[in-house]
Image (cartoon, rainbow, N blue to C red; front, top):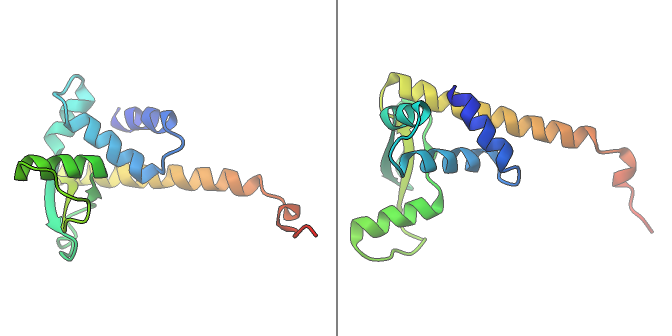
Length: 136
């Protein structure tokens, strides 16, 4: 059910890389009150955490997915009460709130990467050797 909802979103934004689409999709689910079963699960199983750019990922606690830049700027502005520039060292991530949330984020990330590989494969199958000839 959740993968199906994410797949529909992926198809609606073909110009975005799949990892950015995943980040945007999660942010759109979390920034408003849940209106469906999918939204409710995302609200229960996914948290937003912060960390510095130099901070390493926790020991194998699952995939961390970075928030969209606009979302990070919004959160930083809300926390400081003023607009913060893009070069700030604190980053925000989606991470699993529990074991099942960790598995959910890992599955969504793997699905997004397989979707990206499928797009690449279709592109490569459409390329011919003659496309690489240098024209004089």
